[in-house]
Length: 547
Image (cartoon, rainbow, N blue to C red; front, side, top):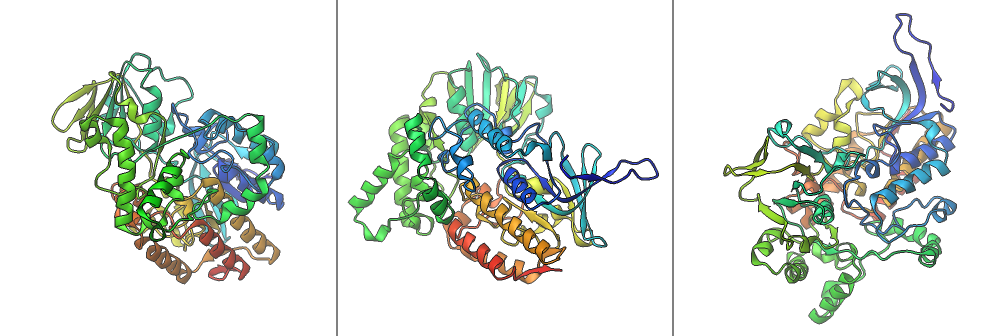
């Protein structure tokens, strides 16, 4: 329990109230590091998580084929060289079981478990203006009184599970990839349907095709894909990347996307032949480099984007061959890089298998789930034994809007964000004093960043802000309305200049009915965002009202 104190039970026999300096929601990549930092300041701090163990995203996303698409050696904490070098990866893009083991290694090395409460969901939080503290409630009936509330719930942690009428009538097994059970889901010889062909759906489809009896993939929005190359790592390869620790620590926080590579080529400076040569060379890397470090002009210039898009389409056509599959599985109505770009391993070839069928639901959408399977708008029933929903998340906002968070005057964060999604640098929200946030909208961590790079930076900023408050005898911090208005305007101006803002995708919240449209992620770059955050801190947190 660390130094946590429990008040005496009320006279009416109600439950005791736990008092904390800081409460952290989530025990994933951000939550673990945030706990380590605040505990290091001597705060009485505790993390709460719905899961039964650490891991966050990498606890829940245990579906078949789940793995990194950031290189393993950059998806790591950089605050401790010993911690970094104490773990060795087995390949460039390892799978979920290995990633989960790594996060358990972190929790154990830093002795964090004693200050984490598992199997506990935070259901509500209310700011008390009389005490300047938060009252937090959980599904276990516990009440916590805390000065600071820090959310580390993740940007892809609120799965869209209840999408189709009749799901509860299905006679077979229905699972969502974001809530995949720990026990084995028997797919052998079964009739399986996968709904969704985003990054998650692609990983599932390519992994289970040779296990199932028959696989139906319900395709609405096709994706540009890049063939992954994931070489195995032995002692020699591990030693090589570990020797780069100081270089990576220096460079990753300052690149455009928090990866080790950055944009170095200018489209206008190269001949058509040289452009093709660069794209071919980057393609062979088998990573996200074509998206995140080829030509930045693809995000701003439609003609450049079309040339790069056609390059990728050509790669995909050469593998698919079948004209019907080419028409269904290769995007035509949006450009490469304006959606999340998935890496894949044999995904396209999966559709050439005799036991795999692609079902077009772009023109004939899914109408409902019936006891026998999935029914499309034309009345066709696709009979299935297992339905796998790879239908995504309420990104950026969902982790917090599913909690009843009440700020000054009882205002509701769910209602506020239901009207207009606003934050101050993705770190705080006007009207919610002492609420600090990570992986929320209007920061790179909402979508366009190697997550550990951005989450480390955000938790460090939060820790620095709390340290500043404590050293100066301050108890409350809240961004001013003017500060938030200025950041939202800057965010929107930056976003409107690129093609992402003109493309329908979850990057704009387009996958959630009724969700206000705004580019969720700050598109000015990780390095630029980091610099702006540092300037605010170094300037005494101007724009953040403290008292």
